[in-house]
Length: 306
Image (cartoon, rainbow, N blue to C red; front, side, top):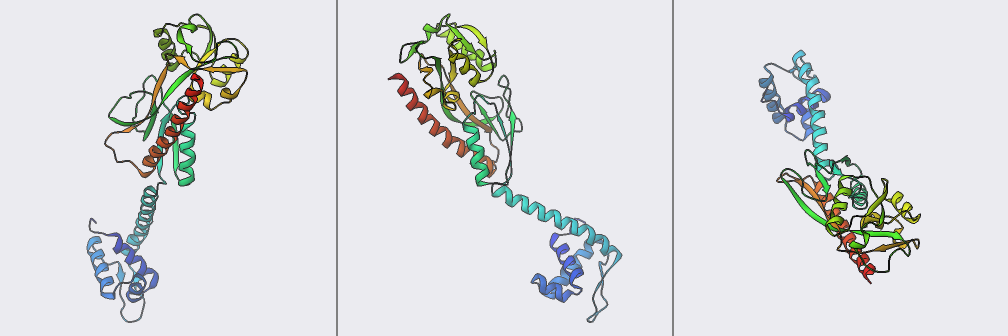
């Protein structure tokens, strides 16, 4: 059975549907002798005749063995067509892509990437997975957004440097940059002690400030509401502020910190693997979006310093 070819099965189907070798040859664009040779090869492969040939103008008949070959042959041809379609869709960028992410890093980049991918490839299948920041792994993911190194053999592109900014109630600090040391023992609203919040508090401590955390709550918008209420200031990543109305809210003042806490944001993927067109396009889009955001961050930081 190893010698059965799809073209032989396709020819058998044409003969069964047309009734004669001649009409099948015309339908397929072959010569009648080529059709006869293909059926002879098929019969050698399956070990018996698949057609009874009465001769003359009378139509051929499918043998009992031929019925078995024809039934399963049609299934194989359908599967082949499905495979061809799937490969064509993959090459066109309409496959599946698995992306690892976590919200605080991808507030603005990932939505823009997904929107453009769906616009360009409406049939693509995008699946998102939460990755634990304490132990990020690429595993079976196609792409992974993360702000540091990840375990395993990976390649990456740096997307941007994201600064952390001081958010305070208007009038709480003088205009311009604020030395980190001024936050020592100052009341502060913060996230619960997540991986990134612990990193931030250690970074502030290394710069000489141990703020007095008076309230912890998840969600950047909730934190900013607490700041507006005068409960304390907050130190939040630029992307979170850029995605909100904080930069234009006259109830708040936003300050550059000296020294400025910042984290590097990367996009990772398995090293040495053949990327799908969809993954390659996602990397391209993410890089373009991040470049635009980085330019906006630089302009925003410049305004805060002046």
